[in-house]
Image (tube, rainbow, N blue to C red):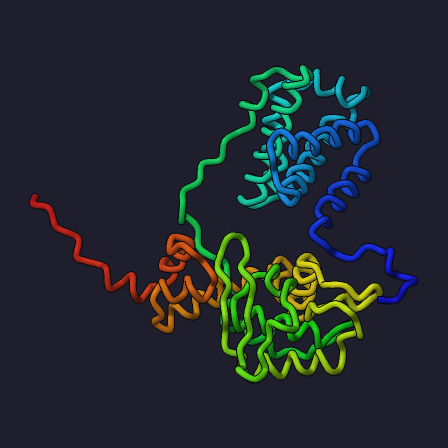
Length: 329
């Protein structure tokens, strides 16, 4: 690495902590000491991971902004004035602009923060119970994957941008193997066996490592990037930043490039890398692959993790249908 840039930060497992500090620094000045104490409490008392702390602090920043704005007093004083009606009103209003996953995240953040505030005597112990509950049922939703038409569009439109070869190789990996963005970010040069024509992806989120056959389309996209666009670097990660320092491309950047690609193709910008994973699993199911094989290819240790995909296989569900028994009149 260039010595002039050696001291500059690149993405690492510590990036969540860096992002948390940055998010707190952007909050209202009177809220920052409270947020820093909350972040420390989440790590030391609740033993949350850095990534979970980042999520909870980010949601809490929105909540505290609403508490402090217009209060005319400091953050702690504003919290002392907080009522159950105020808590419920904020949650209901905030939920109108967010989906179920974001609502659950906000609910957890608010309850944790109010418990933290209660432990310091700033709010009543029962205030955390005023955060509305969200009733949901396991497997009640459907996985949101890309349709075949959308997938063809994403793969077939011309590739432009600052790193078109890198972006193409990443999208090909997502679409072909249904891997997670973190697995692509972690992919190393040694994980690609050109002689055996295989590619290995490290285990992620408690799952299993997976080995796939290196398809000609993916191999061509990788070679095109590695030989014609990847910057010279001492890093052994396959995908690198396009600006100095040339470190590992972080998962958030992969989400950003997928969103940008979708926008260029005229698709909803809300498309996430996980949509390719859902499309991959649904495609295997339609092809007749058993649930166990799909779980193995996705790197899941439990069949329950892929049970939801059975709901989108309408042909198999119809095979289970029976005539409704008629009742005598």
